[in-house]
Length: 457
Image (cartoon, rainbow, N blue to C red; front, side, top):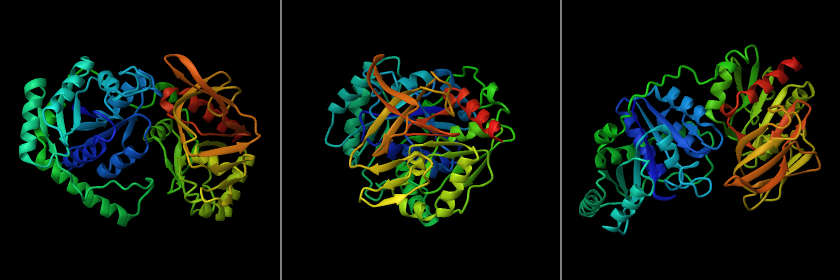
């Protein structure tokens, strides 16, 4: 089994661009490439998937226990020729100051895979070796197996950097990536792209892969990626308790430009449990498909607020499903959609579904960001009273309501609570909150959802 993690000395070092180039380059060699992303990010996994045509998976040590991460990783990697994991922030940056908790380094250690460190070579020479040496010795349980130098255009500059790093650090330098002006990840929100947009992006990915092929030793990198055989064999992603638990149930999944933030493994777990997933578009379809469950994920309803609002047939169809006790689960953008109205950043207000008595309003700053946990104050669609869900929030909107909340959210540092706030709304068989969760953290979440759906049938 081959796998490596692309880590950086900091955010902005070039991890994402280089990861995309590596994914495309190995895929063009006819290899089955499995992409991963450390942390809860939806954007980078979306790029990975577009570049390879293979669903990228999230490896998140806050939301998932170690056993679940191992299960997920070995299940998907066993089907690939090589796995490429994009790290998050700097190599040792995580949750708090522990360099191995929720960090790229911690994930590499947990999975037993080597790190390829991306170092920005612009305007530096021998000092780059001091940087690499510091990373090498900072946490010796993490194997930094190779270095890629970014933003290095000349062969002479590269030779100097390579000589210094290999002399003082005894770590091989695998090559350089020059500045490529034509390669620029779009700064707009990532949603579903049109065929013409995808064709333009494909040209970018191929130019990037051309540069990677020309300047990096991909054969040497693949050799460094060989993992020791440890005997793991995971035949299914879903734990035994989920096998067949959702048989006979149909889930309607909202998927279009307005709603597209879903963990691929969440959907695969549902299918592995026997649930039939039918996709629909709140933007274009007139009604939801016949179903027992509805999943409204995150996305950008604020960008498409007018179109969502004008599709009154769909709004009515979802209200009708709620009144019939269809088990509806909504995250972030889904919460905004289920409220009475959504006010955009420009101040325009648009009516929404109206299941939840409250209004969403876009603001100019992040309202919540990062990992948190939610303790259920009562029985909900996903949890019994007292259960704790682990997830993350990232939103610029506020939901203004007098509706009672069903979760107590909190953040901790070093095991000490540093903040808490109320949130989450359960009305009838509908649960909505700003929290994004990964179902593999606790199979009981899906079992609760299935039970609610069956009781309403």
